Image (cartoon, rainbow, N blue to C red; front, side, top):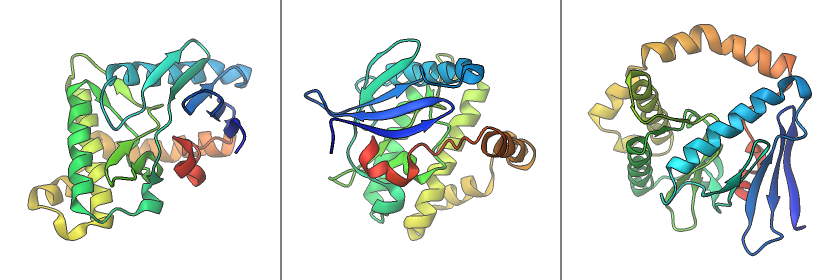
Length: 217
């Protein structure tokens, strides 16, 4: 593998794996983003930087190394994406739940755990979360934060239902059966519009490097 490898290029810029230094890192670069949407690319990059900064020192999420208006450099996390690693051990989901609780205590919601490529199965069988581009940080952890945090939990439980269904508790089944009202509105009204705009009009998918997550972050 070359020292620098392009993982993704779209309207929002590039994502590269850089192995030229002592440690492999992931670089998100918005400088090549389309001019009419560069403001949004930079906004999403800043969101990711804020979230990762709030999680510094937490094992299981990328480490923010540096960032500026156009670029963000974060640590590389090795492991297999969930859809390849297919975790069936209950300890994986217990560890993922602990990691998620720690993130929420730090004031960060992921907002994108519905996608299996955003969860890694590490070599020791533990869980990691990646791709914090849609994450949000809140010091106050108000009502909207709590709704988003509950949706993080529900999405993790969906994966548990897929890979470890016999270990779901009654409480977890109730959570799965009761998505938040805002989530139902999003799925029924806004998500079809979102998919049309992002995929049909601007040709962008937020599944960053989904086909190659085992090599990406």
